[in-house]
Length: 168
Image 1 (cartoon, rainbow, N blue to C red):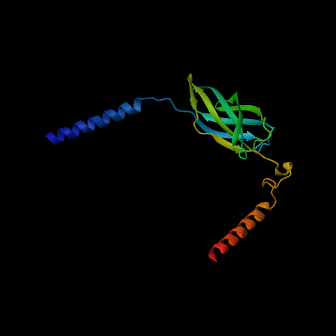
Image 2: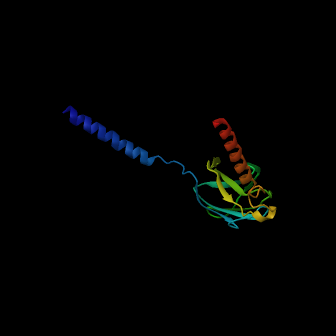
Image 3: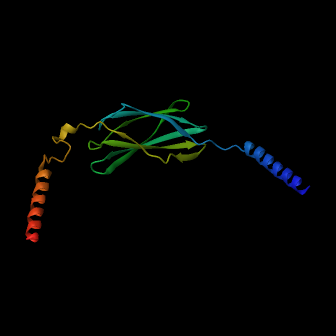
């Protein structure tokens, strides 16, 4: 009899918790459904149009932050931020003018104001810029056309000479 009573109590607790959990309403976090940039592969110093489709209820403001960065220099230059204009429900757009000639990619992230609370997407996304590699006159290898090979061969020769002297 006691076992039967325990099963009934456990069943009722599970049933009550199921009903309570289904009635609790939580605010849905915003989601970035799609992101486009026009032109698709922008060049440094160009004008770009950023369009984002963001899902969620109660979105009042979307701010996009863009940093122009350089893989070669290993740095990001100054950041630009601007509020996006809502084109239609859930679709936002803004225009930027890129300012750094040495940038080869851009990073971006979003701050979304939803029901008075700012939600930041933690993830940063990147887009490569269309960089003209022939503009600086190099072949992309710091203007050392084969000199590193000569130094490498000379180092091997010196190493062999030193090794032979020690063997004798």
